[in-house]
Image (cartoon, rainbow, N blue to C red):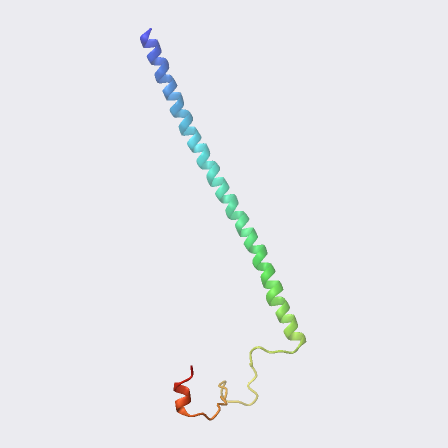
Length: 101
């Protein structure tokens, strides 16, 4: 009789261990599935948001600049040998430059 109870007890413990291990495997696979899904959603959101920012921000700026004939970079040299600009500075004393602030 005691042996029968002992066998049932060990069988019950073994079943609990098997269930626990299977649950761990199931939950781990569930976790990795959700991680893959969340990365997919994050990539999709980033694609949409960055695309909107690019097309609205840069695209509209480019269209407005072309309509107003604004050139942000002076790429035409027009007979110049160098790309350097002449700086027009006011004639100030050297002491004024030392005490700027």
